[in-house]
Length: 436
Image 1 (cartoon, rainbow, N blue to C red):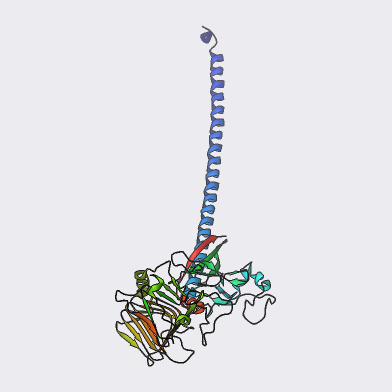
Image 2 (image 1 turned 90 degrees about the vertical axis):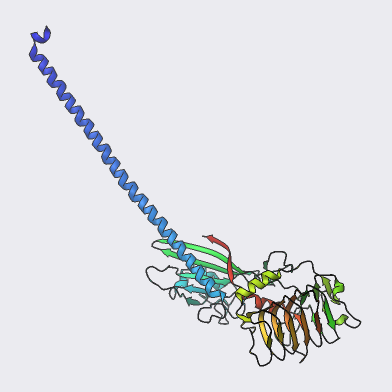
């Protein structure tokens, strides 16, 4: 056989084949090694990239939380005018009012829109000069501790919303409690605009929000009655013209009038005797009495008052000249009486008064704001010409006894200013929110 004839040649062929296979194995091993190396490098790169992305996302999220913390502090410090240590708002609404809530002095310069305040036609820093060079809202230091763990928000711009150079409010524009409140220029508390910058590492987040105070109760007339009302004598006055909230309570030129009395039942529930036509005036002139198209949820009003009240009076309380005021125009308060309440003499109060029972007011006593009575009312005021028993609005539910009356020299004057001032007692809540 040939293999036996030439065994050396076969050995050479086997050696060559073995050498070729060894070379191929080395090439394959190198290729596999290269593939593993490339995969390892790719894995490391992807892992590093994903870690960076995750870190950036975490920083971005933390920056957003920091901006949200700024919004929360601003709302908290705008909600309670009586908190002198923390409140940052004005005593009464001022068009184009604003403040910067800052982590440290000078941080408002980070606001890219801040320069617009030097050309907006308003005295933003309230120094009696308009559109000065570099004019901006004043700064107020944050109360947040500036530690490594604390939220970092260099500034929060807090301002009243303006439109067409007018202060935007949120309230019952159509004077119908059955419909939701809306933005307008006359009724309700001002709308608040907030812009907050949050930072974490290299991440920056800006949040823009608007906040409103939902009305405690809508007031659209000096007297709203849930049942019959007796008018006694010719010395009383119920006036639906819009009056100033301060003495001598002059009517506001050009302001729209509202009905003198709205009654849930027919207008015959408020009969006028001869000569009383001029005692009830307002929308439409004299004898201004209309049937209401809506009612109130008195149980909800009571529940809200019980929770929010700053002052709680026991059933059967009597207030007189010797008792201290419960609220002023500069410091309106929410007072809740757990039962019948009698007020006499020259006692005064302001804000919101809710009586879970019958209300009796005599003499020259006075309340400026919103009075809600779940029982019957009896007003028989008297006193100087510039004293009115209620300046703002009176709402009463009445009882089956139907013993509500207004007589003597009692005066009830509608005042959107006194109503708006009372509505400042409500807390701001966020209405819109967006990340920029």
